Image 1 (cartoon, rainbow, N blue to C red):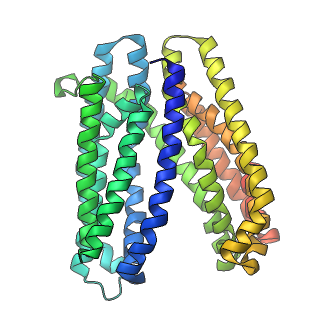
Image 2: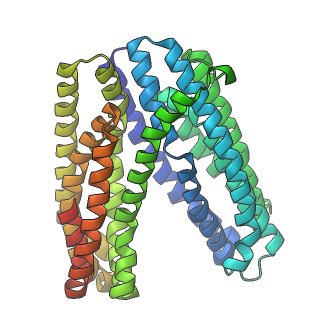
Image 3: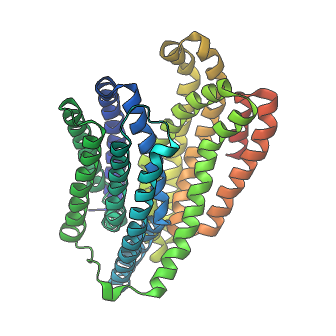
Length: 410
């Protein structure tokens, strides 16, 4: 299958997965709210938000694995490819064991830290621990997931993701309606994660022929290479998380909860719009690693031009759509009283979307080329600019000022 077809299929299947995720959330959320009640659903939301940070434990090894598998596969160096897979598997297994301890501590302390109302503390601990185990399973399976991405089989990866989303949604509804509650939902999460991990192992090793990890092939030199890339990727992730969520914190400190609400609604909508661009930017990285290994500068230039053109068009389309349709949509969705405050914020953030999408294509290419020091410097710089400008502009213009700070930083 040609690279062009793989890229097109990857973009289509990535967009399909985003659509399924939205659809599952749209249909499943009201059912869970009705069956669980606000208190238990709130506990589940806290648990999922808490465990969302567990993903940082991988130290960026997952993306490093994608980069180097793609690079050595393109160079035809099967020995180095096996060393990368084996070393990454050992590292991720050790990190998974660490995460088990973290999950156990989080489960033990959860009832003391968070208000869980009348929900039994023992059950809350089990829910936190089981959802943590789900992340542990997914962490170990990242080696095989990276193999799918490195071979540019985003179609297979997203088919598995779609099946995971649908299965988890359906089984959670069935379990809750049968009285399983939060513990039942947590068990579903672990079971689905195990099934997905086995599917990725089968697709990567049996279908695509990616080398299986062997302990004898793991070595310190490869570990240093993976950590050299991964730790910088971790720094970039942390900086981007601050850029994404720091605005609400700054507003909460300087402008109060009402301004946070206006900004959060606008930020949430524009962030979902940016996620549409991942259908393009997400498939670019392994191609960049391949062309870098082959020293094919012409192909790299074509990749950069094509991806940025598509992302520019998508960014402009989304920005214009948000500005033209945002006011009427917000009035119907959240009411006229709140829309009048949110609409100016979302208009400013829409311009940031038009800039962010093309830059995400360049970021994926530079990641595939291994230019992590440059990217980490940009990410940290963006965070500092947003922090400094956000503090100043928020005092003057509230939520709109914070949105302007995001725009300037972008």
